Length: 168
Image (cartoon, rainbow, N blue to C red):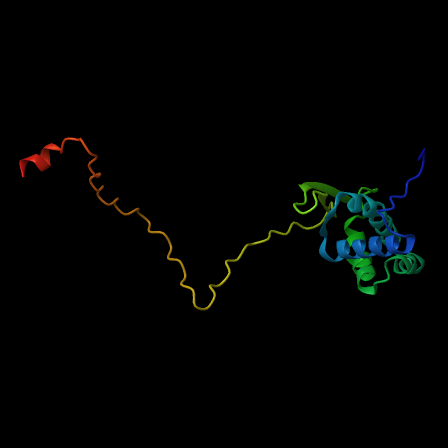
């Protein structure tokens, strides 16, 4: 039985798992939101929240402890200067996990993990410039053009000709 066995192993050795989670937390600090599998997001959440709790202490010992875990100076400095002060009034619950559904290739459940108090960033989609040698599509006209007149259908064997054609 696995009672009180909290560690999610993720199919990796201890050292590999520690590096993976530290890199995920550093990416979360840098980008404010990362897309990963649901299992990894659930494994990253406790470490990320512990790092924010260290950042809120604002001591040299806390900074060195965070640096020992994350091993990236720029991530630790951003954690202590930007992310921890934003979470100053909050007593835990610094991250949220948003489930996205399954990945196409292997049907792994995917999720976003992000800071709860992160600034909202709206991504604007810019149209890509046309490649050389291809013509750019013209924008559709404001009013649709008239439909061309229908061609008379072909006569089938044994059908009488329409009245217009008989007059001729």
